View 1 (spheres, chains in turn brown, orange):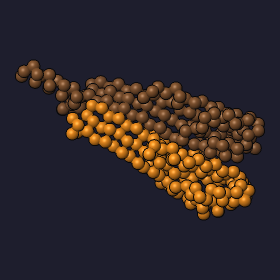
View 2 (tube, chains in turn yellow, cyan; view 1 turned 90 degrees about the horizontal axis):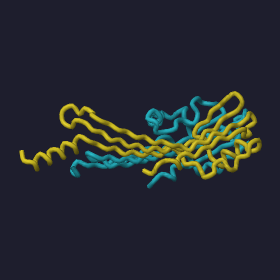
View 3 (cartoon, one colour; view 1 turned 90 degrees about the vertical axis):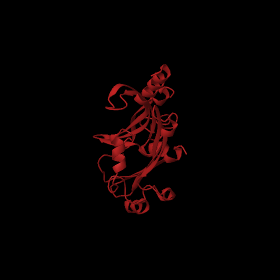
View 4 (cartoon, helix red, strand yellow; view 1 turned 45 degrees about the horizontal axis):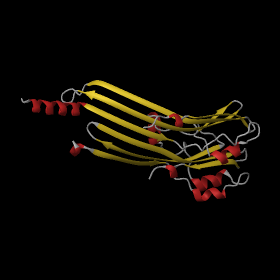
Length: 130
Length: 128
């Protein structure tokens, strides 16, 4: 086998044995900028929150009131896989990197439907460029 | 290698579309639960099969239902849509998925009249 033939065979084998997967997903509805800006503790009502932010992605009921959860998730994932290409397809090496960030806002209401607390974190801005 | 390449396009939806044209009819304190059910149909969690949503939640691709157990004073109507595309080659694969939903949540008082409601149309923000 000539040098060239060996080189071609080696490149073909490498191409067949390695794989790269790049995956991006956006899940849910994006929260508006400064989503918690108009909420005043002890004053804003459940009706106000529903009007301004829409329905929650999750509604939780606890002993002394309800909790609205708003969530928007972005996930970037990349995988490099090296496997035996012909007989066993055995994975020799795999590297996966997942970077998931979310915008999450939690609004606590008291029993009368008045906002008792707000927690908001915009995490998707910290997601590394993909 | 290019002969073995492929592409993937996914467009799926689940649930009944929310009748947006009926939203203006909802008047808190006046509209009844019967009217809401007449206008918007069967609520989520009570009638829908939700096979797809359950699968997506298992795969961590969806946030899950708004309420885990049915409440008598809350009705949820949701239409979920997902769009995805991908390029598949032997050595490099690329996928991009977007999932969003239109959701209507209606709260009722003890007399089954609308207390308040919220609607968000998220599917308009999906990429074309």
